[in-house]
Length: 313
Image 1 (cartoon, rainbow, N blue to C red):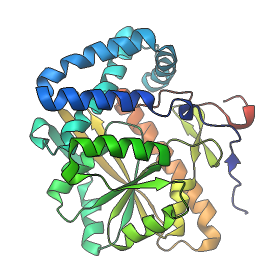
Image 2 (cartoon, rainbow, N blue to C red):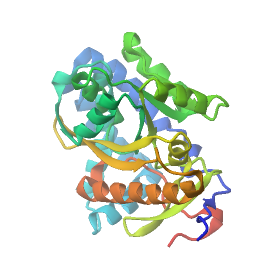
Image 3 (cartoon, helix red, strand yellow):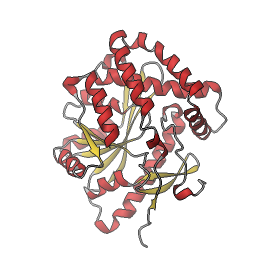
Image 4 (tube, rainbow, N blue to C red):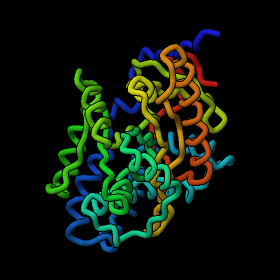
């Protein structure tokens, strides 16, 4: 049976239109407040920020409402919708302390850590496939427990430049290692990090809109996920570990690692089918955690829209 052909989107993805403006602005504000006031006092500002987005960001409010209906299986209350926005503001706020290595501020539990330990013991680099859920910066807390762990983050170039500038301002001595996707040498940089035994983190739940995607079922509807991140792992013959850092209220976070794919022995002729299967497993894991931790999803745009002007199912 021939490999399934991917769907190709021909129009820009919705999130590109605002280029993470809300997230970057929030982060700049939180850097100033958080480092001066500390987590407890500066958290007071989060309620004002949450209320502002609830009242004056109709697109964010609309997309949050649609997502919560799917994740909760019911019409979300105003309390649900405010909580969703508050979780987003909290995770953005807490990035400052995680980057600044103030781990004592948090209670962090970890599930699936032996997966990471096994890769480190074997000396093999691997991909960490996350999503715009919770906080990826929790990887830094795992690095404290696993001193050999080194993580580089691959992200779209425009966001990479902005985020690196802001995060470096928090902790200049520990600036994040970010690989800008879209450059001609991006794959070479990724391969070089992996060959050194580092992990490369990528977020697999957004597309630029002009790349191959795979149709999956997510929360009961059809969604279109990019195949590029997992195809890169297949080409480089690497293992992929699913990773989320879920916020669970107060100062509590839960890190999840789960096996996603192992392309180390995948022959070239079976690559497309293996990548498609991995995208579907990724979607199944997202579905699971969107249902168990629904307020951690931070894709505030028309995530379920179909490519090529076709209506979503």
